[in-house]
Image 1 (tube, one colour):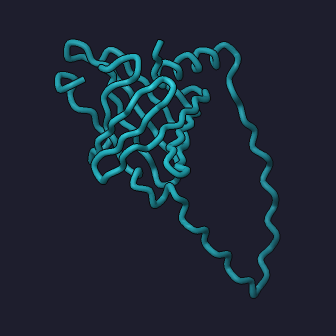
Image 2 (cartoon, rainbow, N blue to C red):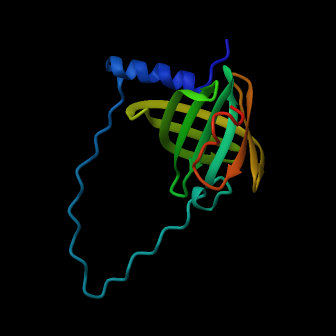
Length: 167
């Protein structure tokens, strides 16, 4: 049986709501030492691979492994975070919608997306995709389990087409 990231994410969300939610605690912040009068300002960190990545921006795709009619938008931000929205249309109306947010990284030719919020609730969903093509206006990312090729087109803003257009 083939399942999509949105389907599995929904299952994980359900488990989270049943008491299996993942929680994190931040360590208390240490008090900063007073600055010396002649202190040299700290150097700025080098840009991360995400901040200079061709993935930064908005991408639209249609199809999930278990439902070819689901459309989605992924927004990859330069700080290594992302947000995504999935929707399904039937007879010109949105009949299902899901949102996710989390962090993304690229290591070699692997895009890793770790969702930590799904439909406004804490959850964890981790997927890795092999990047098969990256161009200014299109990229292909291959999920191996289940075997599925995602094809995404760059769009100017986070906005779905009307339901009567495509999915």
